[in-house]
Length: 87
View 1 (cartoon, rainbow, N blue to C red):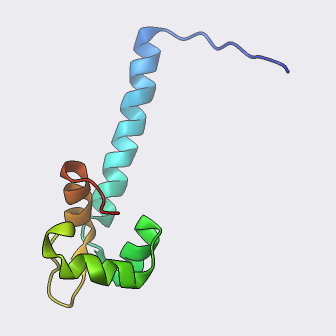
View 2: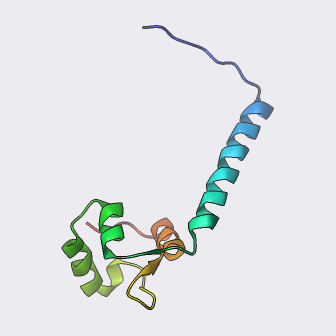
View 3: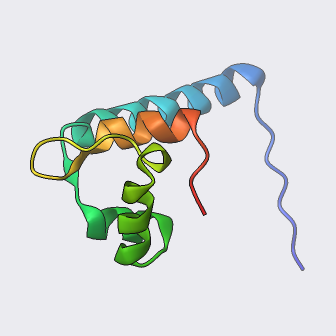
């Protein structure tokens, strides 16, 4: 198998990481106002929609929903940062 070695300076590496972090923040800000429903949450966690409905019944398992019975994606992302995804 061929191997390739890439050499970079610490400053170049910091610039690369900073650029990727900036892109990730921009993506998150663009999607922050989007809503996600039960089917979207099921797809996000790789479970059936009825599993999400069961988690909703156990009220403390998911972030609170907004009007229209959907979650704001930014609320979901914030909740995921501080909580373990139910199983």
